[in-house]
Structures are given as C-alpha cells and as structure tokens.
Amino acid sequence: MGASSDYCGRFAPTPSGPLHFGSLIAALASYLDARANNGRWLVRIEDVDQPRAVAGADQIILEQLKQHELHWDGDIVYQSQRTDAYQRALEQLTAQHLTYRCECSRKQIKARGPYYTGVCREKQLAIENTAIRFRNDHPVLSFVDDLQGEVAIDPAFAAEDFVLFRRDGLFTYQLAVVVDDIEQGITDIVRGEDLLTATSWQINLWQIFAKRVPHFKHVPLALDPRGRKLSKQNHAPALRDDQVIEQLAAAMRFLHLQPKLTANAAELLSDAVMQWRTRDFPKTVQQDTI
Image (cartoon, rainbow, N blue to C red):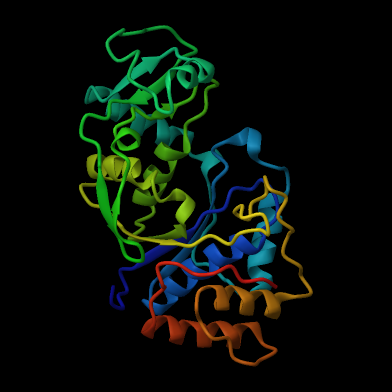
C-alpha cells in the first residue's frame, strides 16, 4: 500500500500485564507501517474481557510505549467504555436475523468435536443467561494477507457460528474489535499471526457493517525456548525500562530490519521507518533473542 494520508492503523493490547518482547514486535510493526505510509497510529486498550484486565496494567503499557518512543495519535479508547456501541451492533445483526441464542456449555461443545456445530440454530431460545451466536451462513474461506499472501482457512473453522455475546454478559472480542476498527476508521491492521484464522470471522462482520475490508498484515510470532509464543499466559518477561535501545533493535532484527548504531530511540525508529518503506516482511522468520 502506498503512502496515503488516509491510512489509519492501530495497536490494541489487552491490559492483562506489562508489554513483553512479543508485544513490542506487534507494536513496532504496526507503528512502522503507519508512519511509513504517512498515516495515523492509534492505541486502543482492549479490555472488553474485563476478568482478564489487571488494574493499572493499561498505564504501565502506555508508559512502556512512551519509553520506546512509540507515540500515538489521538485519544486512547477503552473497550470497557464502549458497551453501548457493541449493543447497537448486536441489535443490528439480530434485526437482520443473523443471530441466535445458544445454551450449550463449553464442555458440551468440546464433547461433540473441535467446533460448534449449530446445535441451537433452530431452537429459537428466548431464555436469558445464554450466549448469542452469529449465524455464519456465508463463511469466509480465504483472504489475502499483505504478508502471508493467500490464506486458506479450515472450512470447519470458518463456518463456525461464533459467539458475539457471552453467557456471562460480556461482548466478545470478535464483535468488539470490528466495531471499534470501523468506528475509528482503521484502514490497515498489523498484528500477530495468532489472529490469522479468526480474521475470517472478522471479515464477515466487516462486510456486513462497513461494506469494506481493511488491509491485513499478520507478523510472525516470537517464541520462547520451548516453542511457545511469547505471552503473558506463558509468563513472558516484561520489557525492561533500562534496555529500550536493545529491545527496539532486537524487535527490528526480528522483522528483518537492520538497526543502526545509535543511543537514541527516536533516531533508531526514524531509520526503521525509512527501511520499512523499501522492504517487506518475509513470510517466515526465525526467533530473535535479546
């Protein structure tokens, strides 16, 4: 995608703990893509799953971004403050006969197989304390990713009637992320490839709500020595505030950029933006360490 003032990207962390090296890679990639295209770069706190949110983690994350000179445009948006928007979106889908209530527990679904098979589709349940699912009649079986190329999705996964509203009264990430991205005018989504397959579900909602689909770039994941993705659940260590240059340089190398020798983070990023304009990500990269 060429340089355009219409470009709008975002970094949207879950406030379940401080940023780690894997988070930095995703933040850096989305930041560089936005700046290389003369676009805006927004930060959104994805705390729609409130039980996962850790008090104060959002402020730690924002401070970590500042320490690494990853400065955003505009105001910070919190998903926990946007339930009215998600409710309106859910009501729109319901009015279009694209939802239904489901009383199946996770245990029941797992006992039947890897994917939900539409058991409650025709039950016309009206009871409360049930999940609300998307009636996925036109699954997205493939899409083009600007880094991964043509991505084919397992048809059974793509066609699953995924959850929009949970039994515990919370809206799901799948609904919230699309509603937020559309409202914020996001044109390009750069994030980790752990979200690659779920993109098919999100494209379905994009096509309903916006009649357009953004550009996607899913970057490879950093792995720990056991081959697991770096994550808070896997106890990935938090970024260190005394190793900003080293961490930025390591994230650049992971993305196959060449960090210049400098003690200035802003200068390092400026050079990285220039490199981003002329180079694309490889489809696979090896793990880097710091």
